[in-house]
Image 1 (cartoon, helix red, strand yellow):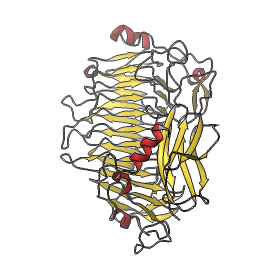
Image 2 (spheres, one colour):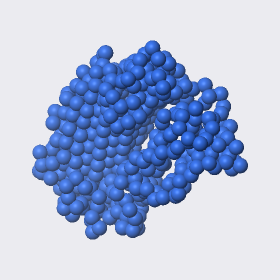
Image 3 (cartoon, rainbow, N blue to C red):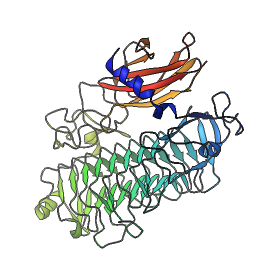
Image 4 (tube, rainbow, N blue to C red):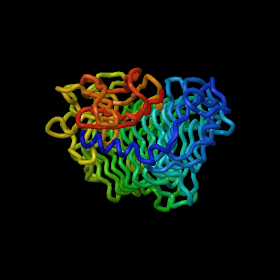
Length: 512
């Protein structure tokens, strides 16, 4: 038996795994049922009141009243809520937020459509002295909500990925607030929100230290945000954070903004890395990148910062010059202390941007909302290679040529490179299997963040391969495969997915 398969079988049969329960919620169910696939529950709130760490709740297509969960999972045994189809809608709530995670650590919300909330579509809430930890919000669509699509307060180590947030009526698509460190915000699309597309605000005036440290904001796409004010990516009092490979276009109030939330006393954004972002501002928009109010020690490299009107790339002030490094950017005018400078004047005055230059969108891109570089774009090989940016917004390795390209896209002439964004360190994401347990037919879902050859195999507890797929090349995106187990006995099975050099395992429970 393959040693890795043997190890996985032992692991998946351990008490930690076997004690977890799988429940189902359906519009055709009843809360007097046992929550099984044959007898599902009716309401999300009933399920939230009965889950424990390690449990999974599968929700069938339908329209549901929202829920609040206050039961915590564990780091290696999260509570998982997963939509089984593409039309699991939560559009009513008994409180102001449709889905509320309140002091419930390690909860995963995956695949829901959340709309028409009074306040937030999804909220994750804790206290300054009792943070909510380790929540994951993934693959959700949050639209037409009263104030925010996704909102967090004092939520540490949160991951917000692969969501779409749109048409927030009062404020932002995604809003991470209060002084909770280590947020990961990646692969989201935020558009047509009245305020910012994505905002991180440590709220210096409130309880806590007023600082959010070690944020990772990557591979997000923001457009048509900010008619009510607020940059596409708006940051207040963040520190030691990495902002890379984001694409921002046609936003009205600004592209990237770094400031202090008006609090002063040195609470600006400090020691951050702003690398390889593509920002194209409309003529009526504000500056592509705003860095003010004691936002010091920041590094701005390899960014496309284009303004199609009278303004330009960077707006900054004297209080933010200490420790500033800015170079290898595509930008034109700079505003320093409200005085507009040409790039050459800025270079003479500050010593910054010696290797930066100007270009138009027509020089760089094919047009429209396609921000892949043209084959003759001057951004190609014009940046500096950075260890913190090993790939572009689609997962293509950097550099492809003699040096890294400027902007979010790395031109790869000889490879297929148009697809979904790749999250940090991984090109394969396992979405799980359903229904699980099952009695004859199982569906396994996964996401490729770049094109790859894929092989899926199923093993019994003896380590014997009982089913497999022919290795096939798949494009980036979400995929699923069905297996029939009509002629196999009840029991536990292990499946393995290989995509390129990456490997994922999961457990299947067949009950007849």
